Image 1 (cartoon, rainbow, N blue to C red):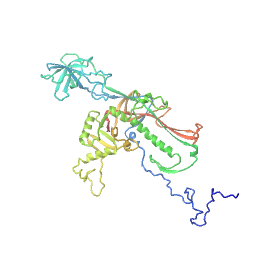
Image 2 (cartoon, rainbow, N blue to C red):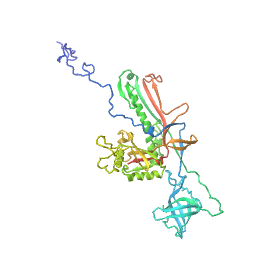
Image 3 (cartoon, rainbow, N blue to C red):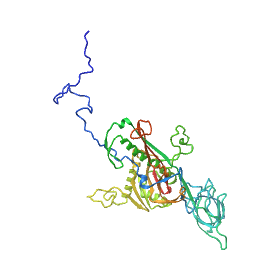
Image 4 (cartoon, rainbow, N blue to C red):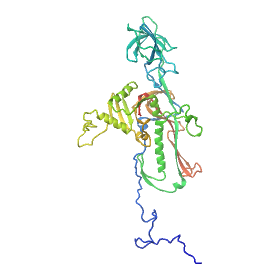
Length: 485
């Protein structure tokens, strides 16, 4: 029986001595072994520009060491006391009246004397003179305190006006507000009975441990391939396999900031406290900037303030807080445009666009359609916050819960540091990281494995480890404003 030549494998391609396309030298599989190589760019194209979002805390705060698991500080309370939830128990011919003090401790610390539990704290003493204002706007009265019942949180007032007191009745009602303006005593009498302690608020926060890691196998390290990059930190040059390590570092740097902004404490009964699946992950949380301002600061909701009347309401609230002269609003793009439009509308030609921006534009110059700040009672400066614009972070959050801006007071404040045991000057916003003489956990990085110079284990790879332990301290949160939907 005669044999035959198998069709495969076929004959080799025969190169031609001339550049002539023939059936014998036509190659259909295009690869990098060909004579005709593709034009390649060795430089990486930055299609998203600068991709990092960290810079906020570096701009407005500072970093300082701490050697404890707990950071505590004290902030001053109000110097004067005002009660806004007072009900009338009895009224005797209008000349005398007994008031029930229903105010309890306010965590924001703005209107009442602080204390513990649900019992109202009465800081009014016999002989002091007070102003009583009906909360429905029906009258204002001046009186002197003639008796104080601390057990029942009641005060008895005698009124200076012959007509006496006229107002609502009801122990549990919020009929009136009462504040102290002085005192009056007869000749030859004893001094003021009782004294008041300083009104301080004690706050605390605990650091969290933040980690990341990059790994590359020893085999990949032996396959050299270079690429030219322009990095987000301003450096340019060629990177080999460590390009991914470089991006891991940039990503980790961002997380160091966003963790301080977004962190929340684990509440009692939460899944974080109850979880038993992993003994590696954290179980306590921390108080980030947003959490603190939402709970102890000022909140604007329901759309961006885009009229002077809106900012007048914000200014009115700031007047009742620390009255910080200069403030910076870190905001997203839409909020920035709303402020630009509001300020432009103050110019009579703003609607026509002829004198928008600097108010002295002409046909030979580029039209400036933006503002960097304004003054109305206080100085307000605005700056775009990339974190709120980045679609992979807060910029991709719309609707309920979206955050459009954060007003941060400029400068620093003096607080009593419970750990240091003395007064210390601190920026309103700053980061405390764990450190001692032998261990600095501000920004730790180390290499493990058996490749890339490491000799720590039998793992055929190089692992670059990152670790930091830190917490953010938001001092005077009552001076901050968060703008959210």
